[in-house]
Amino acid sequence: GENVEQHPSTLSVQEGDSAVIKCTYSDSASNYFPWYKQELGKRPQLIIDIRSNVGEKKDQRIAVTLNKTAKHFSLHITETQPEDSAVYFCAGENDYKLSFGAGTTVTVRA
Amino acid sequence: EPEVTQTPSHQVTQMGQEVILRCVPISNHLYFYWYRQILGQKVEFLVSFYNNEISEKSEIFDDQFSVERPDGSNFTLKIRSTKLEDSAMYFCASSVMGQGNQPQHFGDGTRLSIL
Image 1 (cartoon, chains in turn orange, purple):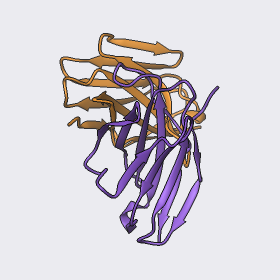
Image 2 (cartoon, chains in turn blue, green):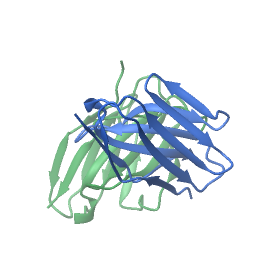
Image 3 (cartoon, helix red, strand yellow):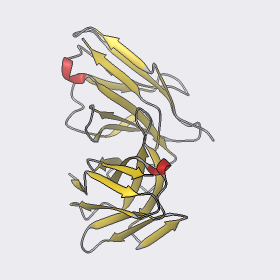
């Protein structure tokens, strides 16, 4: 089955700086890669996703890149704000299921 | 914006008892899922469901677990003979389609505590 690895596990950035989270996946059949933001005690909320036929996607301050050959994808948050503080999960979809990474706790320091 | 709703938000049950977690997926969605998240750990897939059948299930989803769509709106997860290690947050999700790269939308979860 799919195995998604995520790094780093924690990330502390100064407000206004950029944050980058990296994930790798094992199953070349995976073809859809969403990113979820989860605030304490809340549901995972989809923030951006990318499909395997696309190399990069951007939505305002958030961008995701995908390298299918290397089987890795990354989340980039620019101009970070305190409300970006949360746990971020990457995931890969294959066979009707999402396999999640272990999560990155992002703390934006004011 | 339509949301996946889950009830109850918190369920406390004695070990060995049966629990039923309930979910109302988004109305035009056809694929339904259950995931669980043990405190401080990653979200883990349990089962996917389409057209009144299980599409895929993980090794966690053994004979202790079952899912059902009892009517046109609800989707339930039943856990029989609960164990301490079943304590977790259980999330329901739904998507318009299954494999085909459609976003899965999650509910707020049910926190299950087994005593």
